Image (cartoon, rainbow, N blue to C red; front, side, top):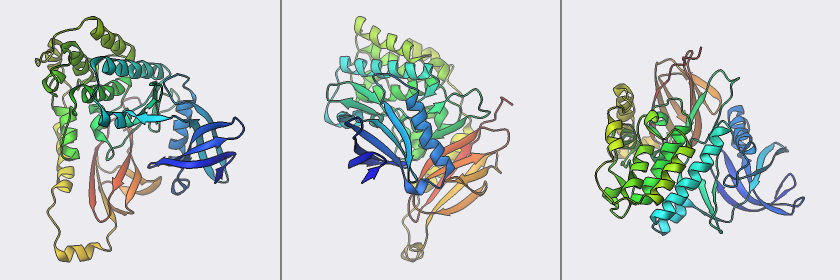
Length: 395
């Protein structure tokens, strides 16, 4: 099989937007990773634009720790991106295999923070920093990938689009992402803080049995210090991670560069481990962002109802055989236009029957930022989605 001049060797993986292949470029005699937009997405301008946004974002970046883009092209209706192929594992895989030393954690954190600092200075916010998007080559070098939902700052754009894997891997999302608020580079700092906490403490800072619990933890609950879960970690590193995880972006590190300096200082100033929250964290609690209760309640009520529904009766199971997946969309304010995979489906509140699988959901309302997310729908199940739209104060 071929796409343009690229000869497919094997499939590497697939996601909501595309399929990634290991391929050979005969012109350069080079092995590449070829990301091809899924056929069922080609009819949607929204998906094509999102797909090409990733290429545009990566194409603007020239950094040794970011996956390189070689080419973006179209062949017989197929749209694809040729990227650097990495032999190695994702950080997510490595986490399952080993425990990290303090020095390794600081090195990983410094490398990722420095790389994000570079991207942020180019006007690009990743917005999906998580272990599976950090690749480790055989020689140990880290590579950040998957800028598929990256926000590219554009002074000519009248509106920002907010995007996130709402039903994907929410554990690494920042509070402002959970609350559908505009994000900047400090959101990536928060996500990196979650990773550093996971590497240091051996567990997640914001656990939960369902989305409502995870979202509530991210926006409302202060995690225990790293040293409470791993007394071998130095207290100053625990304090650095705590600052990354502040609810209010103003209380986090202002840039990746600032975080790099703080992490490297942990090597120079080894401090005894302590389970007491750092003084800076205590002070910042008074400044913690006040989360509108209505947002949490709306999300929690809708999501909890989904996860705690009792078992179905035999009669309902028979009736369900013909039922597709159902997406129940509500918004504040109500009356927002709902687009599914680029197609207008009505206004909120709306109950929509859709095919099971991932769908691109977009809400628009005059005077508010657009809200955009990928949502996973399961067959014969109802998925609630409550969205708080953010007023656009720019216009």
